Image (cartoon, rainbow, N blue to C red):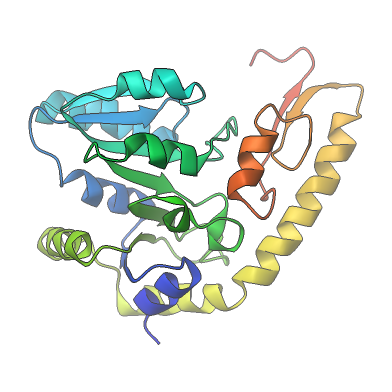
Length: 255
């Protein structure tokens, strides 16, 4: 079975393809845009994405950008413009682990023509399936959990729309961002053990988070599996697990 079919299967997608890195997947998506279009992006987005959007795409391509907190759905709706073409979401975000209700955001975008893109790297298809919640595109850095062995750099995009897949595949083929056969095999190997690795990572992360939360030298712990997380309810509307990532603040640290 090809990597595309494996990735589509675990993400509950009809279509998928792999790219040379997580960022190449993101850059490939942005080729859907033209000058004057607008991107609405969650404010606490992965550093590589915000640097690309703010430092390269926006100034060089004339594509407008809004970085915003999506917590307040009324403010979120007010941020949508007639020129908005892509809404970019991570949940949990990287690095401060803000969490959002994917279905609620997808419903807010209905009828607007805006594509909802969700970076699902942190949660993986084991814990979260954004396409089932209304997303149009799901992206992954396959380098992380899906690769799983620290020996491959790759990205992936998943879709349920044949029309959208065809557009994106044309862009990928033209830009040359497709993944090599050997690296694809490494990712297939990772998918075989993804379920057990994500489950164990989540259990270990929760145990560590509980210990740190009770530690006198820790100011706070943000982990979606803890009820103390401010977005705990929103997270569990989307997800089956807390994931393996957490954010901690040590007392006395400038953070």
